[in-house]
Image (cartoon, rainbow, N blue to C red; front, side):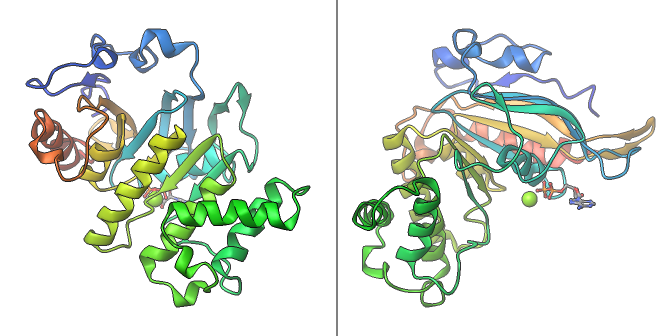
Length: 302
Ligand SMILES: Nc1ncnc2c1ncn2[C@@H]1O[C@H](COP(=O)(O)OP(=O)(O)O)[C@@H](O)[C@H]1O
Ligand SMILES: [Mg+2]
């Protein structure tokens, strides 16, 4: 399976090709980065692998880079190792093989340089929204006085439209509101890298759409670098500059083949897209079909 899934860029045939995506098909994933930016890769993953059983690694040989200000999504079936990769980037887990670097330094543990948002909001239930975010802000800037912390907290709560609920506790908030608080908290520590693990997975479609729009606006305004796991193809197409397609490990005729990065899809749609016009954009359906085909027929090939 691995050998016949070429690592290549894909762009919708009918879409105008932006300069960044006009890179020749290549078997070497490191060559997939736009050449001018290759030297400035902000995040670098080199031959990452994870094995809980030594003879059956979950995935192996995963390499990719993310440039500053880039939004990269990863899509793959459950169990292929997406969360493991994100946890390695967060410094919460270690890989069995390979290395992860951010800003030229190897990631060796958790850091306030990286903001993480999980599917479960992970707020402290006994603290209000204001206190939850203030806790993170004080961890990052222990020297700040209370008024400065408060101002900073209010600014970020305002960014996700929750000022009216700032003194409420998580139990008084809806699922969507709690995820907004998680996003505000992640942005409030002004991380160099934002890591999102299916942050909208548990939300209803309408709420998810609204928060996707908010996230997109804030990411564009702050030029935040983002790595996000999603199982929602449209979410990936809306938000990301590139989409990493990941395959599951599987037992094939020749023996066990670990999962890994099967393909990198460069999003050819204009960056100023909105959710409402997404399906009207030339190239959207080609790209969507390509990713869905991957998930249906190639990602889990047995
Ligand atoms: N502590 C662990 N011990 C053994 N296997 C694990 C452990 N954590 C995760 N796994 C396995 O590793 C694989 C990848 O998990 P994960 O990274 O959570 O996948 P994903 O996020 O893509 O669904 C899964 O098959 C999971 O069962
Ligand atoms: Mg996961």
